[in-house]
Structure formats: structure tokens, C-alpha cells
Image (tube, rainbow, N blue to C red; front, side, top):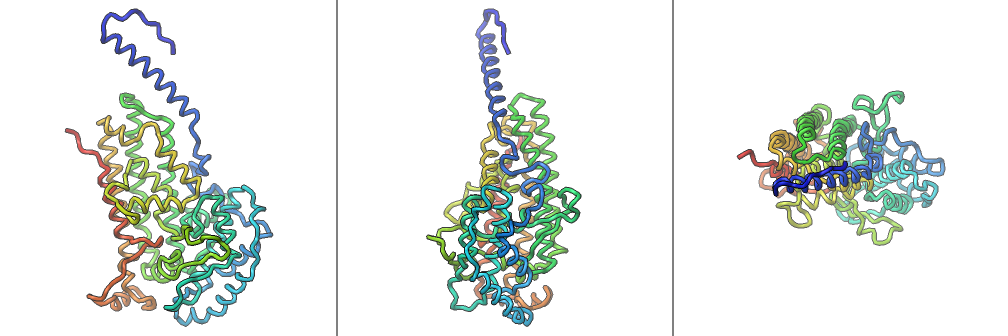
Length: 462
């Protein structure tokens, strides 16, 4: 835009002109920046399916049949290594033969997969499931300190993981995002058109757990649209049209977070805490988190690899919500085991492209929280969104207490939750720390997350 200016008659007029020129230049530069902005698809994100692939992953080429068939034959059929029930003992021979078979496999080169993102994801999915099936079906005894993972699955998993920039272990992506198929292939992915290909325990409770996680992710897709629109709008204080839209979007955002909260609560009637804790959750444990350390055969310096196992803390959509609202998990968090460090570590278990998206989201030219500080009209809607997230995290604490803390002091073969209550650890007996599925002290971390969210709210108007 060209401005034809007459000689200024006062200092105030001169300042107005200078400010006008500055704003014109600033917004032009900003538009240029937006034109260069990467789209969600660059981060393997779709604004209809979110962090899920738009279509289910396909089977690997026939040269990888050993992996695919090995997973299909074992998923849901192997007993946990610490399960001493009659049913588990009856399946021990099959389990031993399966592991012997895996040890005899050759190390298959992943070169054929090239740079095909979906094939690489499928390879990580299959191999990480094979690793956890192998490790957790090994019969345990008190003297067992290390479990050797055969090079036939360890070496290619590490190689694939390096390309995808993701931890070489089972992750949230492997159990939920890459594990789905469509009930009706003619219809698109939705909360009512999704099921899961593989399960460790073969229980309906495990399926319900995955379904709850998937529904939360799919409800969260609308949040990603809000984030994308905000980034494209790049509103500034004083732009009342843009600020008005942001206010309306924050009201929408609060409703979406409330919907996710309802999804989380809906797991209660479909996933029994006792079944989850003793039959499902043990399959997720990573190296040394709740048992022996793992040795990846044929992998140099494997002790430096990240192998904690899957966790809800690896959900990219929830990390994106934190970044958008400006939740600072590092404040008040110290040490390598602090909540801020935990959140950073969880991002290393995400697909590399999704992690890049979070970095991009954190680099918006105008953060939402800073804008809300400047525009009092946004304060109420912003704080409502923060309060909704705090409420969700409070509910998450309740779920964690019910599904892990309470169940940690029951017996594995007590049959039903009512009988479990009679077999709880006696008062006064030393209780070990209750760890989440990713090997972290669950309630402490969740409380830190809730408190960090609470601190994010802006003070009311003076």
C-alpha cells in the first residue's frame, strides 16, 4: 500500500505516520512469513484425522512375512512371564517355541522400505510389538536381571526408529495411531468407525482402553483446526475482528477439552481396573522400568537407547494443547525426574514429524497467552480454556489412582475387583512407588501437570 503524505503539522501527526508506516511494514513482513508457513501435511498431520494416518497402515511387502506372520501368530496368545495361572502354564510351550522361532530368524534388511513413511511406520509398529511380546512372555524369576532381545528384531527396529526419529520401543503411536483399522472400509475414520488390529491380552478391556485413547485423539482433531486457523490469522492486539474470532475459538476449545474429559471418564464401565492392571498394563513396561533390563543383541551401546514403553504422556494432541495455551511444565520442576523433564522426554517417543509440529506450534509469531494478556476481552475465554484443561487433568489423576495406585496393592489372581479389596497389601507394609505405563511415578507427575496448568491462568481484571 502506498501512502501519499502531506507535511506533518504536529509531532503527534508525525508519530501517527511513523506508526502507520511501521504497522504497514510489519504486517507485510508477517504476511510473507505466513506464506512460507508449513502446512499440517508437512508434519504428517491431517485436519480430518489428526495424528492418525488418513488410512490404516498396510501390510509390509512379502519379504517381511516373517515379521508380519510372527506378530499375527502371537498377539493375544502369549502368557505374561509372571503369570502362574493354569491357563498361562498351559500356553508356556507355545510361547517358548515362538520365542525360539524369533531367535532363529535372520536379520532382514530394511533397505527395501526406502523412505516410504507408511511402510516405515508399519515396520516400527510390527517390530515394537514383537519386542514386547518376546520380552514380556519370558518366564520371570528373581535372579533374572537381563533379557536379551534377539538381533532379528532388535537391529531392524533400531534402524527404522532412527529414520522415523522415534524411540526403538513400543510407543503410543504403535498401540493407538498405527494399530487401527476401519470397521467399514468404505467410510472415513471416525470415533464410530475404528477398531484395533492387535492386542496383547486378548481382553475386551484392552480394546476398550485403546478405543478410549483413540476417541480422545479424534475429538482433539478440532483443536488442531483451531491452532491452524490461529497460526494463519496471526492476530495482533487492536485487531478487533481477529481478536473476536480468537475469543469465539477459545470458547469452542473449552468445549472440546470438556468432550475429551468425558471420553476419558467413559473408560470406567468398559475397562476393568483389575484386568487392566494385571493383564494389559504389564505388556507396556519398558527396559528396567518394572522388571529386568533389556539387551538389544547386535546393537552397539544399546544401554543409551530410550525404551520406557508407551504412555498417554506421548499423545501429541495433548502436548499441542499445552503449547497453544502456554502451559509451562518446567516452572517449579527440578531434576531429571521433574515433570518438565518428563514432558520433554515423552516427546522423544513421538514420531519425529509430530515432534517437529510441536516445535513449529511453539514458534508462532504471537503466542495466545501473550495476546490474552494484552487484550482483556480474551482473558475470560482464555482462562475458561485453561480451567477446562485443569479439570481434565484432575480427572486423569482420579483415573490413574483407580487403575494403577489402588490396583498396585491387590493380587493378580484374585478374580474380581471386590475380592481384590480383601487381598490388599496390609497397612504398615512398605509399598513400592506406583509407576505409570511409561515407567514413571504416575500420580506425582500428573499432579505436577495439573498444578502447572493452574499456574497458567491469567489474573482477573483490575
